[in-house]
Image 1 (cartoon, rainbow, N blue to C red):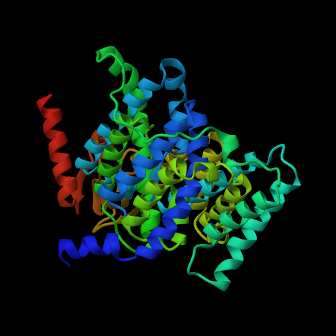
Image 2: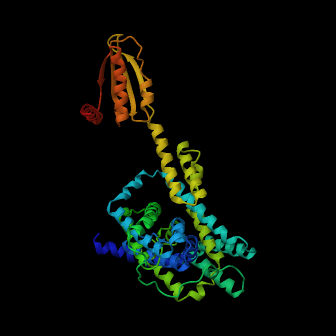
Image 3: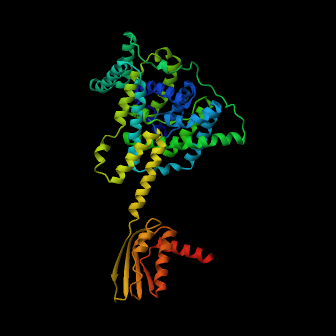
Length: 485
C-alpha cells in the first residue's frame, strides 16, 4: 500500500462513520472539558480549548487513528497545586514543557516499556476507568429531582434500543437530540450544560505564557511537567492498546507518544491545559462507528463549532442526556468477562487486577493504580521464578555426591539455594550440575562462591558442570572485578 493509499484509507475510508461519531464525541466532550477545568482550578475555556486543539493535532500527527485525546481528569488532578500556587500562566508553560518531554520520550522509543505492563493490570486499568466514569456521573444526580433520573433512564433506553431499529446514525447522538428537544419543548427544569460554566465566545489565539524565563521558573514547572508527561503517556499508550484490540488493528506507539507531545505544545501556546488520550471518549468514538483520523478532527472542529455558533443551543442540553451516554460508556467499557475469570486465572493475577482497580478508585489516579499493579506483578513474578530445586544423588562412589540445580539463581532465590547443601556430609568430591540453572546477577555468583568456599574449608573438591555460556561469562567478569579489586 502506497503512502497516498494509506492516507486515503485512514482519512477517507469511513467518512460517514467518522463524521457522525465525531459529532457524538464533540457533544460528550463539552461537559467533560468543563468539569476537568473546574477540577484543575481554571476557567472552563482552558479545558475546552485544550480538547479542541489536542483532538485536532493528534488526528494529524498521532499514531492511533480513531482515538480521542483531550483534557482529562487524571491530568487535571496533577495541575491543582501548580495553578493554586502560581496561576494559569505557569500551567500553560508546564503544558508546553510536558509536550517537549513527551516528544523526547517518543523519539527515544520508550513505548517499548509497555510490554512490561501485564494483562491483569490492563484489565484492571479498563475496569477502574469504567467505574470512575460511572462514579463521576453520579455527582450530577446529587440534589436533583426525579426528572434527572427519568431523563437519564430514557436516554439509556434510547441508546440501547435504537440500534435495533437502525444503525445508520449513532444511538448516542439520537439520545442527546431527543432528550434535549423533549426537555426544551416540555419546559422541564433540569440541570443543563450551561449550568456548568460559561462557554467561550472566541477562537483560541496564539500566546506566549507570561512567565520569567529563569532557572527558578524551570525548577517550579519541571516536576509537574514530568509527572504530567508520564501519566499522559501511560494513559495514552494503554488507551491506544485497548483501541487496537477493539478494532483489531496495530498502531505506532512511538508516533503516538510524539503526537501527544506535539498536541500539548500546541495547546499550551493556545491557552489550553495539557491532556492525553481519553478511553471513555475513544470507546464512544469506536462504538459509534469510527475507525479513522477524520473522527478526531471532526470531534475537535465540531466542538468549536458547537461552542461558537450553536452555543445558545448547546447550553440547553440536559446533563441527564450526556450522563446517560457516559453511563452506557462505562457499562460497555467494563470487562464483564473478567469477573468470571477471577476464579479461573491464577490467584496472583486476580489479586493484581483487584489491587489495580482498588488503588485507582481510592486515589482517583489511574497512574497510581497501574504502578501498584505493575509492582505487585513484579513481586509475584520474582516469587514464582525464585523457586529453586536442588536434588542430591550419589555419583560413581559414595564419596562422590552430585547436586543437580534446577531454576533461576538471582537475589531472591540464593537463600534457598545455599540451604540445599549438606556441608557436614563426609564426602571427597561434590559436583554441582548447573545444566538446568541460570545465574543472573552478582548475588547468584556470590552464593555459588560461598557454597564452594564452605566445601573447600572441609577439604572437599568442587566440580562445576553444565554451566551455560551467559552464566560462565558473568562468573568470569565478576571474578575479574574481585581480582582487580
